[in-house]
Structure formats: structure tokens, C-alpha cells
Amino acid sequence: MAGLPPKPWPTGACEQLDLLIARVLAPNPSPYTYTGTQTYVVGSKGGPDCAVIDPGPNDPDHIEAILAAVGERAVTAIMCTHTHRDHSPAAAPLAATTGASIIGCAPLVLKSNLPRSDEAFDTTYDPDRVLEDGEQMRGTGWTLTAVATPGHTSNHLCFALEESAALFTGDHVMGWSTSVVIPPDGDMGDYMASLEKLQARDDVVYHSAHGAAITKPRQLVRGMIGHRRQRENQILRLMGERARPVAEFIPDMYKGLDPRLIPAAEMSVTAHLIDLERRGMAALKGEVWRAR
Image (cartoon, rainbow, N blue to C red; front, top):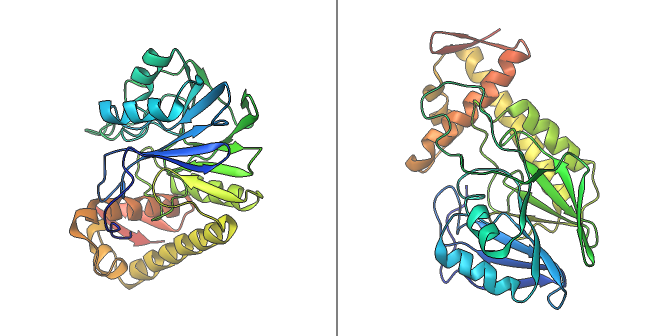
């Protein structure tokens, strides 16, 4: 993961990216969110309506900044790529203020009783309409198509803006780092399949929830697929040397890692191991993983 860029950051400012897309940065920087979560307002600046993508955390200053970016337009839809707590909590208060419907990803239902397994998720998220893969939301001069991309989370969607050949990628593909896949909800097999799905598309630019616009998206996705395969090969090699618990993979795989990111690295390795186990290439005995 990249370090934070030097300040000042455009927190709270409305950045017009093209005729149909504006961006507002939330004030929630961290080692996991980079400079913060980026909310997008889609629709012509002088038009009658717009959509808001990934409204972000329930922060009054951020909500006011979104409303300022919206201006006099009606908000047709508030659309969430997924329900991590830095993405969807502002949906409810923004809907209450604007009268807009919350449309997009499904609420998360975790198939796990692990302690605190829902810690990172917004349990208040309550959409008016869930979009399936390929369903569309339309406004004046804009069309957003849902692209199902499970993996980072089971309910993750991207949104394709047809008029701009742009894809809003949430956390599935980011402009600063690879995505973290955290079980039990995150699934490495699904994540890889979703990357392959995006690789087959012809989007011209990606706008992610964290980091700069991605202007060579297929090249980046190809590199991400290669990176994950490299990680998988590292894990297989290390298991071939000896069986080991997850924590003992990290020093060999992540040289010079920020200690604050060790838990995320361990969960990512766990996601790879679970996927390898499913494919008959790894086995877990107690807390120790070995090659099969």
C-alpha cells in the first residue's frame, strides 16, 4: 500500500472531473482509506438531476459538502457499491435531506458467527431497491449500469456510466492499493473472477473510492491479477518448505510492511489459503496450514 501523499488534500471540495462527474473527498483518511473516501456526483452540472455514488461516512461536514456539490439538482438516487462503514452510512441522512431513494448493493448478511465479524460493516444500511447485475439507473443525460463484482465483499457492485465509458469501482479496484479481501465475507475466488470480468470490459477510465482516477484500467487489472497469482505462488512455496500458521507467512511475503497493516495482510493471506483449500491445494490442521 502506498503512503499518504503530502497535504493539502481536497477534502470537502467539489472537483469536476468531466461534464458528468464530480468528486468530493470525505475527511476520513487512514492507512486503510488513503486520503479518505471519495463520493461521486453523477449528472450534468447544469442539469435537473443527479445520482450520488458512495456517500461515505455519516459525517455532517461531508454531507454538507455533498449537498453543496449537488446544488439545485434533484438527487435521483443514492448508490452504494458496498456497505463498509466508510462507504454507506451517509446514505440514510442524505436520503432524509434530499428525499432520494437508496439504490444499489444488497444489505450484507454474514454467514458467520465469528466474534465481531460484522465490525467493518454498516448494519444500518437499508436500500429501497437492490440492483442486480446489468440493471440500470437513469437520469437526464446519464445511465448507470450495475456490474456485480463480489470478492472484496459479497455484496460489492461497480457502476458503469455509459455516456462516459467510466466505471465507478468502489473498493474492488482502487487508485492507490490492491483491495483487501477479508474472510468470512470476502472471498478470494470471487475476487479473482470479478477481476477477470472487468478485464473483459472496455471501460476507458475507473473512478475508485480511494486514490486517483485510473486511466489505463485494463493494464492495471492485468497487473492485479498477476500480483494475486504471485501471492498464491509465494504461499504454495512457503507451505512447501514447511507447514505454518498464517502469521508466519507475513515476514517472507510482505517485506517492510507498516505494522498497522499486518492484520490486513494476515486476512488477505487467509483468503488465499481458504481458496487454495477449496481447490484441494492446501489443508488446515488446528492453526497450521500445509500443502496438499
